[in-house]
Length: 372
Image (cartoon, rainbow, N blue to C red; front, top):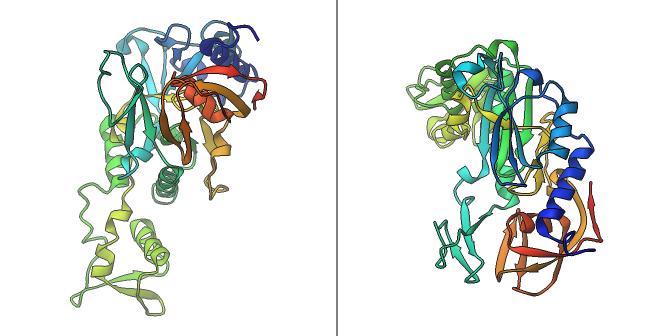
């Protein structure tokens, strides 16, 4: 292969374009009424206020004009989606969105800063390396953290369906740190930010007075019927899941309030509040590439999916041979590996692409690489 073909940018452009040439994207409803945005590989700029009448025109743009590192569409539908100001866009409604990130959990937010010039890895996020260059940031996120976020997303999905009555719900692995949940029921489009905040408060159980919902008897017990609904049903399921000690009273169970008090926090869902109340939020296309990680934004069917694995989100196959620019021991979603500066290394395709995107290796050999 020629030196040009082995340049990092040429290779990334080729594989991203090859991926999108397969037309994998999930088309959102009312595409022609949505703003489209992307972060381009060629000039490293964020381009907004795009609009495409069909997927055909969108594919032409992202395979022949700009190569997207990230590809978004608006949660809102507009009368004039390509207008440069929000006032001119003519807002006509928005889906109801939720974002759950794995790094919101304790011990799931370790960050490393990699300084290539000085061949040094710093703990935490730093503004600049000693030579003034910008460090590359690496998030040490285990797959266990993704699994924990997945369980929160399942909990949210069940609340939206069973307690709030929504039916048109789609869920996605974000391609990086967590999950996006989108509600498309017709009645959500006209909701104001304040009305969305009320739904958010219920989901997060913010400032909820549980006493009227979960009363305590004079002897310190909580009584739950075996056929419950809403929040009480959720509490009952958590009690059964954790195997807490209770008394079976035929038609209901009796459990000490002290036992219940310890699990009340499990009634809430760890949701990013900013996303839900934002009427003009952008979200990633289903099956687009998230080039922070090299993974694919993947729809998840909670009715059929109980376990996750990294291969579900991997758009690449085979191996890449690279030469690291830094000495580092890294963890990529639970896969641990070591880099030695200047020492050629053959890595699984997914990790190799990630390191190329982070600009901490140079490409040596691609003969065993493929686009899934």
